[in-house]
Length: 392
Ligand SMILES: *Cc1c(COP(=O)(O)O)cnc(C)c1O
Image (cartoon, rainbow, N blue to C red; front, side, top):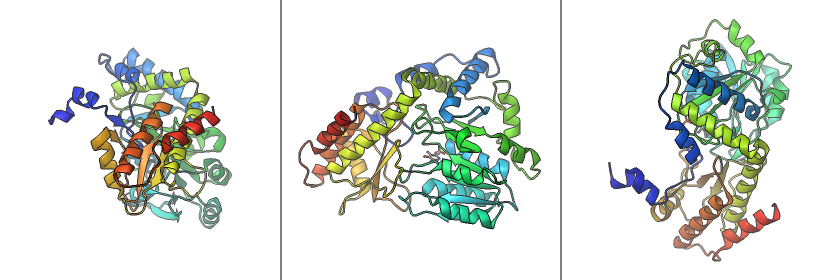
């Protein structure tokens, strides 16, 4: 262990976790997770699971039972597919970034036949193109990433839901980086399976994932004999969820953490949580623009939970990321895909205040100035504070 890995060293350096996940975990959530370990099938854990479920339903906009899994987000992406499709079935993946491509990779690994609607990264999804494909095939599912963390574009789930409503096709959405920070109205929009995970806008450490499954999806799951899942079998998970349990050992501490995070979100008022994400992400974009950083997105709707800036010509994204960490212990993301070196990404989700994004802009200005960009001192802060004042 190097000295910078010790807890006190991390705290004393002012470590700022500003990734689009995992995100900062509030002290209240950390304390809730430090409770004594209990029986994962005892009353304490069942109460926690039941309360977490009750509090997350309005955030999902659903009355479905919620299935919890010990897993990262990718696990429930795979689970969503394996429960509704297998070899011989055909699905349509709307790819508008790295995580959409992951869905295609997962489906191919499961020998599902995959068609894709490839959207240019940074542009809005093409609903008409999806509709055209739906007229050609009776797809098992349309699969899409709600909030593309690699580009900062949000998919219009309401429009996609309307397309599948009167068809046998299901709509599956990954809202790992959206849920809790941007609106999700699963039942109203007709999203059949929503999957998400703990470490993004839900303000928890990584390791807890969830799925919310519609009645229409349950009918498909119930009739499907080709399923090759065991751990991920939603039918077994549902039986346990009905007892406020998980099929296999629950990640008890993470459940406690999620319950606390959801309590905080409801104390703030979920409408206020959404408004705060919208306002602070827009303020960060305004500040970035004043520093000469263009938004990677060329379309609406833009994400309120992740801000993706184009790296100015002549600079390399990784160098900015390293400089921010080295000088300020501010941890942001670059890209690990075709955009590598060309974008930098800030999480704007979870425990985020105006002070957070103003500090980001202060550190960003310092780094960009060191790289020789001609920046008016304080330009980013000025633009962001003006934006915040105007939208107060
Ligand atoms: C973070 C993320 C995931 C999940 O990634 P894991 O590393 O498996 O937790 C999935 N989809 C999106 C859109 C994400 O942002």
